[in-house]
Amino acid sequence: MKNFIFKMPTRVHFGSGIVSNLSELVKEYGGTKVFIISDPVIASTPIMDAVKAGLGDIPYIVYSDTKPDPTIEMVDEGTAALKATDCDLVVSVGGGSPIDLAKGITILQTNEGSARDYMFGGSKTVTNKSVPHIAIPTTAGTGSEVTGATVITDVQNNIKLSITHDYVIPTVALVDPQLHLGMPTLITASTGLDALTHAIESYVSLNASPVSDAMGLQAIRLIGANLRTAVADGSNIEARSSMAVASTIASVAFMNGGLGVIHGIAQSMGGLHHTPHGIANGLLLPYAMHRNYIGNLKKFREIAIALGEDVSGLSEREGAYRAVEAVFDLQSDVRVPNTLPDVEVFEKDFGPIIEGTMAYRMLAINPVKLTDKDVRGILDHASAGR
Image (cartoon, rainbow, N blue to C red; front, side):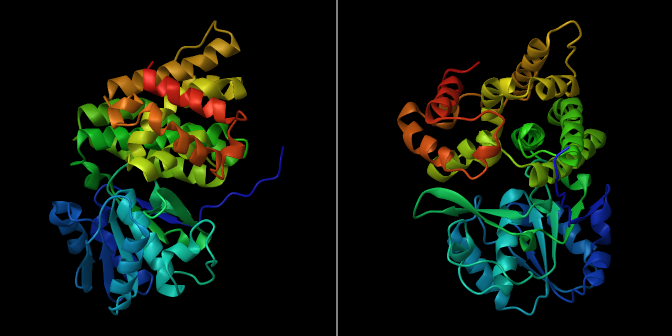
């Protein structure tokens, strides 16, 4: 067995209705005034009311001047807003974008400069710990509440990059499935497939370990058993709870095991076309699996089983391919976009997408070594459909 390191510094608090205990967590980490980072939609919903109620008598400021896919400028502006207050703890509330924004802001609160300075290829390295950060996800997919990267859009260069460091990781993840009950159907479906992508890519990664494997495979089981129900009946708290747990543990798995070509392509598409990350991952997942499954037949067979497929009597290769078919079926059942033209990405766009994908830093741990031609093949397949 190869050597490995497993990291999970975030303290996870899970439970239906536990947002009501938020003040206890804030006090435990020395917070006396809270800077809440969210978005305009969440800020006007009962979710924010529950967060405010959970703070009790602790004073707070709500910062919701945000948009999806945080940019360098948004991180810098948010940092200036935080520094202009006397807040000493950050609470982020929302999907991946508000949590990523908060991760960038908390780092710049204690490390001087612009977000651009600390992104991949930048001139500075994170050296100081961030202020305490309690992340409260309102979707079950991105898993940003437990990871050490904050994805930021560089508008000037039409690319998404990240600030990656252990100090970026939130201090606490407060995962309350009650806050997910109002999640729209498409967001439920796309973020759920995003979580499945994290679980599968980490499980078949060349950097996987027995611990990340255990978490990735359990996330696949939970998603396979619960995503359809969560989409069909958003009020089902058991399905919501299982998806919330699956999202968190899938992200712990990928933080340790790594990702692959799907995220390389999705990151490029996001920078060039502003395709939502979960939509891109969920769309690309089965097409990339179709190319990757020969790289680890045993593990892809296990994925098929975890998704509920009967592989008895099949060869290892046939059983492995059932994983691809199972994800195509799941994608179809939850009704997310399933071809590139559905998200306004066409053959004329492939050049820069391929270039960005080949530069993706985790492409080297994809289970199959890929060339430009291979990536084009995945895009061609995703254009034509199943």
